[in-house]
Length: 252
Image: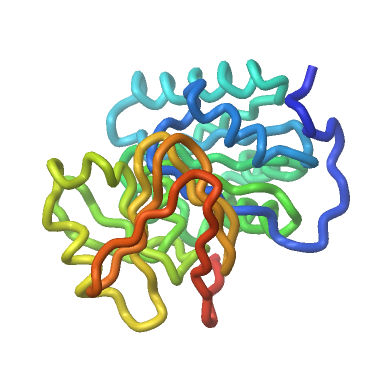
């Protein structure tokens, strides 16, 4: 049994699929509706890439793999876990080949700087972008969302680096509803430092910003915040946000 609206075989797409920037909640029941929506009309095949958790050790990495497999199996979707833990595995042509024919590619949480450094310029990242350009949905949760955007800070030392730039006109703050107690300075710092044409968005837990590159919709149980020097604007579930992308494109 497949999730409602999920196609058992890959249709022909002529445009990139949607991007989902998720504040938290990957592979949990609370995000099942969002994930089913991403797969709507797409191949019932989800590739799970928990690379960002690799620095936390094999046990943690395997736990995310197992959670992803159980989650998508419960949706009637074929799970394809990829054991990408370092640059060598990220450049493995066999692992990269498993991205072909996917309906959804999911980058889960952990260390955004490690995820970015591990994937950039590799066969797996090239295959991810090709799958997305071919119509697959692409989701990044927490560290995954940051890595897909313009900024990928290293949480260990607070040093910011460039993300993979698939949505290069956005800088993402995940867990936004809790970030004020974790890193209260982060929002102000990002707003003050982003260049012209780049937007800072705060995404609450169990919430996703879905769409791209210009038109986005809030999905999940909380909200998304558009941050600027003038203040903060909240968008609730189902509301749309226009964030124009000027010259933005994925860095392969």
